Length: 165
Image (tube, rainbow, N blue to C red; front, top):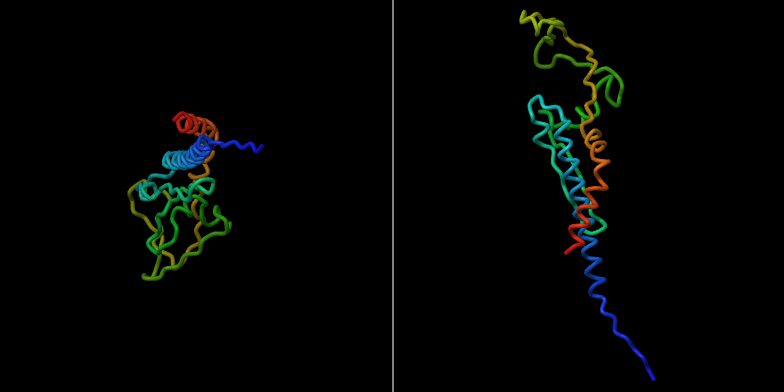
């Protein structure tokens, strides 16, 4: 005598699909949280850099990835956000001063220390100069550090919401 049993795996499949969707939503929420915290830490002299910070979500299921990027560029097309984040010159990755030379004029005009504050307008004229550079302002690193303690709660809330359905 043969014996057979039919297993209805629809509930298991449904649970797996909901779990996969919860993972995608969790990645999206963590990515969006990093984006929001980046806006808390980014320097806001003109808001140009802050206005280019955006989150992207790519892939599906367990291949889901999130990316937060700043797409601001200098007038000559260089990645301004990278320079702000990592620093330049002595403070940047290369750890050396930046040498600049006059290109379109005969000399560079360099404000004398304190002249801008006093309003005197005093400047030095130089054919070239070495500048220290800009200290790093690692807004993405700060955003990730702020997000790390929140990740477990974000994922817990997402899984509870998706798995309840």
